[in-house]
Length: 189
Ligand SMILES: CC(C)(COP(=O)(O)OP(=O)(O)OC[C@H]1O[C@@H](n2cnc3c(N)ncnc32)[C@H](O)[C@@H]1OP(=O)(O)O)[C@@H](O)C(=O)NCCC(=O)NCCS
Image (cartoon, rainbow, N blue to C red; front, side):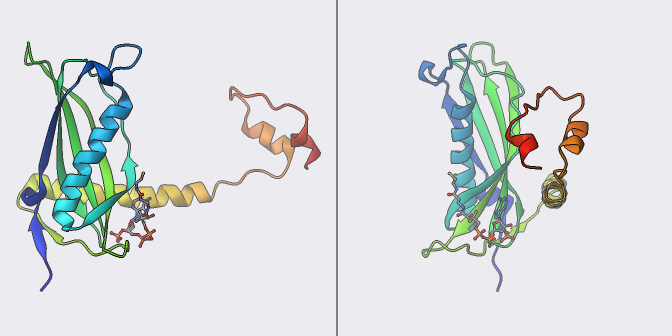
C-alpha cells in the first residue's frame, strides 16, 4: 500500500541567536548565513518526510524583506508544501525577534525543492502528503502552480533568439545601459 504522511509529521522549527560573527561590514547579518540556515531546516523537514537522505535541487525566489540585526533570534519554520514523485517542496517562513522588545519581523519566505536519494545516490519516491486543513491545500496548489510557471518560464527562455545581424542586436538594446564596442562583435557577422 502507498505510504502517506501528514504535513505535521515533518514540520520543523529552527531557532538561532544571531552572533557578531554572522555580521557583514554594515553590522547586519549576512544573507549567506540565513541561506545556510534555510538549507539546514529544509533538509531536516524533507529528510523527515522522505525517510531518506535528500539533496537541494533548487531554491525559489529568496527576497530579503528586512535586515536582521546582531542579537536577534531568528526562527525558521519549515513544512512540506508539495510532493512530486521523488521531490518535495519545503516552504520556509523566516522571522526575526528582538529579545528586549519582543518585536517580531518577517524577514523572508522561500521554497526549497529537495530530492530524496537512495543508498545508490539515485532519486527515490517520497511518501504522499496528507492535507488536513485549507491552509495546507492552499500551499499545495500554490506550489503546483509555481512548478507549472517555472516550466513555462524555462520554455520561454529557450525560445529567446539572439539576432544574427549586429544591427538587430543594436535595435534590441536601444535604451539599455550597455555599450557595444567594435571588435569581435562586428567581425563575426
Ligand atoms: C537534483 C538532482 C537529484 C536531479 O537529478 P536528476 O537525475 O536530474 O533526476 P530527475 O530528472 O529524475 O529529477 C528528479 C526530481 O528532481 C526534480 N528536479 C530536478 N531538477 C530540478 C530543479 N532544478 N528544480 C526543481 N526540481 C528539480 C524533478 O522535477 C524530479 O521531481 P519528481 O520526481 O518529483 O517529478 C541532481 O541533479 C543532483 O543530485 N543535483 C545535485 C544536488 C546537490 O548536490 N545539491 C546541493 C547543492 S550544493
